[in-house]
Image 1: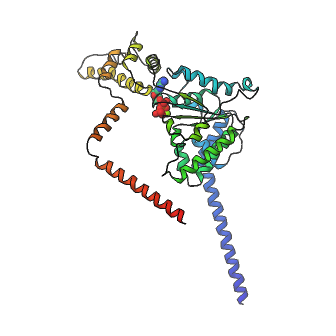
Image 2: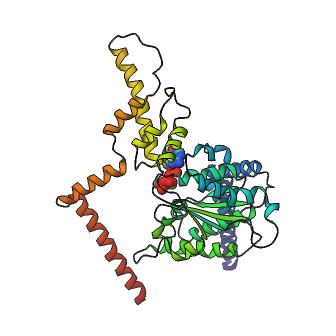
Length: 381
Ligand SMILES: Nc1ncnc2c1ncn2[C@@H]1O[C@H](COP(=O)(O)OP(=O)(O)OP(=O)(O)O)[C@@H](O)[C@H]1O
Ligand SMILES: [Mg+2]
């Protein structure tokens, strides 16, 4: 009697376990196949492979993540080398070192001296066109362009970061020829700091290890392109892996004139507009400062038209063409963001530290103390 009761309980338990297992399988399969992110990622994978004419190779979940978030479709990029003003020497060098070996590999097949550069660094002050150059390469190289978003690598669960890093490299291999682009590379591969988070140290170490793996493989048609405005912050190990570096500096007068020509290419500008004169008035301006200046100046004819409408004057329906005088007006009051923030900082440093500065200071001190404390505790275990 007792034994049949045990058998009955056993059977019941078994049935519960089977029921639970089946329900778990159904729910997880449903989540897997119906997850909108995963469906979107799978569609993006198909689109990218079709765009590059590559066969649909097997990819794991991490590689699909990289495809969904970081692989760039050149058709979505609006920048070409022609839309970058000045920087002629850098543009020419990048065409020879990157575009040509990717587009005409047969010219570089002989011997060991020629071939795709494994690492190139673009460095220079902010707003001078580094990211634009990378976009033009992505558009014109005909290679798969993986724009590694460092925040994406960091935001994953602990342990996943390293898998995502290795997925970037394995995917680049599978889809070669390919370019791995690291914008603001200093935020990933800077000198090691005392109070650095463990996750970012492990990402950095994994990245350097993976990078070594393919830079020694002569046949791999994979390169890393990096950009930074803080090259002095880069880790020695990263610099060693970027054997070619190009300075993307502040534009001189002639370069400013050609940037202005590019920016104003599709605008209505007075015939005989003196680009050189305007460029000479913009000493110390970067490409992005020039863009902001042009945006502000472009608004003046619109403002004028609205004012005339308001005062009842009959005007034509479209704003007049841009004139040099518009730029002179704007230049009289235009403060570049960098100059404005530097002046603001100087003003603030003159006085007492303000309340939120003090709070920031205290929080960062507190975090440092916590980190020392947890390190010590860790070492004592
Ligand atoms: N040489 C240039 N020709 C045309 N436009 C330019 C040029 N340089 C900068 N610009 C304008 O400035 C904007 C910012 O440029 P970009 O993002 O390439 O700068 P960056 O060098 O990457 O700066 P950062 O170091 O801050 O990332 C561009 O979107 C473009 O509109
Ligand atoms: Mg940039």
